[in-house]
Image 1: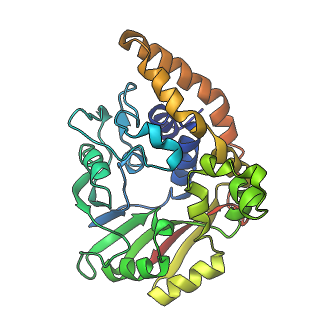
Image 2 (image 1 turned 180 degrees about the horizontal axis):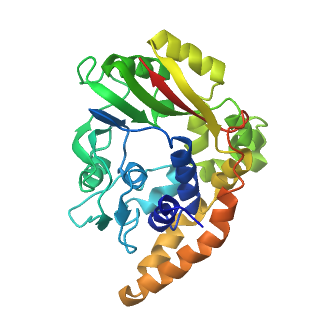
Image 3 (image 1 turned 90 degrees about the vertical axis):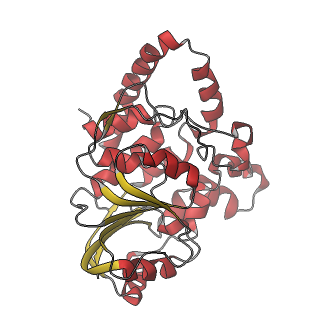
Length: 308
C-alpha cells in the first residue's frame, strides 16, 4: 500500500512520476524532522512538496502542470514551471497539519503559486546567493533542499547559521560524492567526451549536471558545517543508485508531448483518464520505491539535521 503522501505526490506529478518517487523518498528521509516555532522553507518553489509533506491533500483533478510556459523551449533547459496568472487555482481538499512561517524563493511566479496553498504565513522573494534579509537568530527551524544549487554552499550555510537561533534545527538535502557516477550524462558524455552521447545533454536539461558540481562526501559536508558554526545531530543517506538512474530518464523527455495530449482530452473524460493513469503508475512505483536501500553510504543524497 502506498502512503497518503505517495498517493498525493503521484497524483500531483502524474506526468512526471520520477519526481513523485524522489520527493516521496525525501519525505521518508526527513520523517523525524519537525517544523517548530518561527520556521523557514528556504527555496520553497511552488510549495507543493512541503504542502504534501505537511499532510495537505489536493482534489484529484489538481496537478503541478496547470500553469506552465515556454514548452517550445523545453530542450533549451528553460524552467517551464516558472509561470503564473490568476487562473492558477490549487484545489486544496485538506489543509496541511501545520504552517511554515516563511516560504523563500528567487522566482516570484513560483512564490505566487505557493502563496495560495495556505501553508506559508508569508512568502519572501530573494536570492539565496546573496546576504539574506532576515535578522540574526530569527528562526527556530529551517528546511532546504536547494542549497546545492547555489554558487557557494559554504556561504549559504554561514547565512543559514546566522539566522538560526541557538538550539534551532536546520534540515538539509545535499548530494553525495557518489552522485556523479549515477548520471548517464556525466558518465557517458562529460567524462568520455564521446560525441555519440552528446544528446544526453538534452535529456539531462541541467539537472544532475548542475547538482554534480556540489556533490561531496559526508566528511566534506561536515567540514563546511563546522566552518559555518553548525553541528550534525542526525545524518542518513537516501536515493539509491537504481532510483537515481530511473529518475535520470523517467518521463521527462516526453513531458511536452504528454502535456499536449492531456490538453486534448475532453474535460468530462479527464478525471477517468487521470485516475486510470495514476492507478497504473502505482502498480510499479510503489514496489519500486520499496527497493530503496535505506541509509546505504553509497546512496546519492545526504539528509542532515543540524543545530547551532
